[in-house]
Image (tube, rainbow, N blue to C red):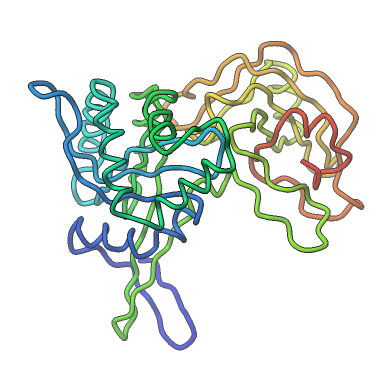
Length: 331
């Protein structure tokens, strides 16, 4: 059992009493979970056409941190509820109901925002900064019609096979967030989680930093992968592919390029290749990126000043930044 020590108290992993307790925790931590530029709507209403498939999602997440914005339909789940079967069934039904009556979803979002002044003001500020949207009605219509269905699963403990099942069964993106509860000896609670899309979003630069400002995540089209000498020569160059890696669900349709960062002693990005497609890799829940052409060697992109930890896990950038970067901090 996992145990956390904080000052003089210790915390042990526990469970939520029920799904309602999980949802209360999400509401309490929503700004930390999703960031202040995203809107979590805890609204439960049936979607779908009358007489057809109708379901009730657990909520919605409006992502205003990117342009164009995106909408996620939320499924909250407990690991104790046979999640593999239940989540798969729920997401399929949600997607069918969503596609059958998108404008009902739009009205649900509008009604929810009418009751939440702070969240509505976030939308209004976004509209003011993005003149492509005439008003709130236009923004919400874009959310439900321009992009395809996508989902966010929030669960207390992620089963080993969940990501594999979601990758194999669904063509639409499904993000998974774990929100694990802990309880201290004195009755206090703590929660373990990774903020939404933290693995693809660059932190804001600090004062005096030479790091470029964060990129709109909608523009990210390149994945940089660390490569050891044997795998690089045999697979990246020899087979025109790179496999058994995790690619964020929201990024799979955006990735057009892959760059190889050769680990020490080279410690530099040295090759780049166009990506033909991304497919599930064996029975692993991971993917393989198949190249559209053999990799090209580029001018090495090294650590700034030769110092730093280098790239230790896949990271995302744009091809434009890759082409202009003089060192890794400029990606």
